[in-house]
Each structure stands twice: as C-alpha cells, then as structure tokens.
Image 1 (spheres, rainbow, N blue to C red):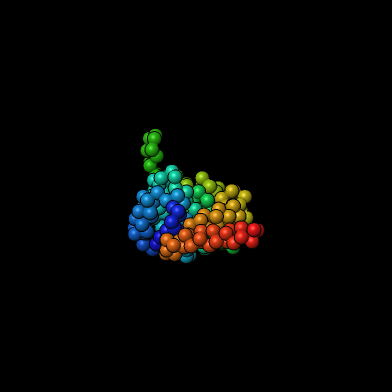
Image 2: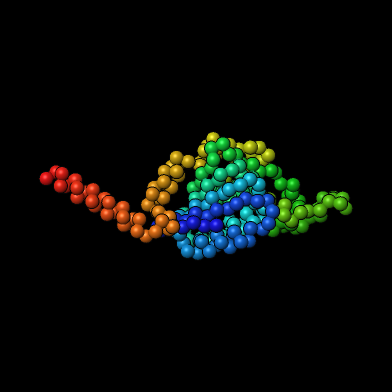
Length: 216
C-alpha cells in the first residue's frame, strides 16, 4: 500500500505476517521505486517475522533503486529476524521508543554449506532422521547482513532496546523526525487537491498587503 505526495515523497506500508511470500508487496515496492521518488518512507506495522526469503527479496528490490532515492524506515512494533533486516536497509531509521529488536541464532553450522573454494571434506556424521532446512540457509544469510550493523554473535537471543541502537548509530530519532516534519510540511498529500498550495499563497499575499496598508 502506497501513499504519495506532490514533491517526490512516497509512503509505503508493510504489514508484517509470518506466513506467505510477500510477492504482491515486493512487486508494489518495485513499481514505486521505478518512479524514482526523492524519498520513500517504509512504514513497518504489526508483530511477527517476515520470512527470510521474503526479506532478502525486499533487500534486492531496495538495492536496485535509483541512487537519488532516499529510504526512511519507520518501525511501529518490535522487530524480529527478517523484519529487522528490512528496517536496517533504510538510509535513516525510526522506531517506537519502547519497541525492541530480536533475532535468534541460526541452527546451521559451517559444515552445513559447501565452501566456494577448497576441497569438499566429508561432512560430520548425521543420523538418518536429521536434515538441513533450506529456509535456515536464507535465515543464516539474513544474519550475515544484520552482522554488518550489529554484532550477531553477542546479541543473538537477547532483546535489544532503542538506547543500544543509538549507541550503534542506527537511530537518530530527533534528526530524522525533524527531517520528516520538514519534508511533509512541504509535501501536502495528493488527496488534498491542487488548489491548497495556491490558496495558501493567496492568503500570505493578502496578509502582506494588509500589513503594508497599516504601515502607511
């Protein structure tokens, strides 16, 4: 779901759910980014966790955007796993003051993936009932990217609050809120109609004219 303004700012809402593949949402995001908005604000709403594969596809779409498009991510709830990755992809980020971040450790080990270089060694013993979940491989990739922002090894399995995020430079709420307030003040919603800005200018001109008459 998207809302647009008249000056290149668009808002895109992602409603979090732990099921489904987010195909429609990702397609909508690509269409919005193809229009090269000056600023895209992604609103992340709801609890749960975006599946790792979907989170990685959101990332691919955002990585392919125009370099002129600035992305702001705004989280209204506690973020988990793949949802956390989507939030981290913003150039600027905001989050509800009492919300938290959480990501679990991966169940995969280094022996569970074939190395890109080097000889393939015989894997460690596994009983006949144990298998590797390919989805866990996607989740391990999500953690690799998260590790570029936060130390996964030390923080996995623990709740992370906003004060910690500020320490890592991931949120600067006052600066971002001020930026958004400035942008929105200059960007009335399209549903307001084209005459609003003109009417405001007329009111300002009338006020200046009356001020001149009073001086005389």
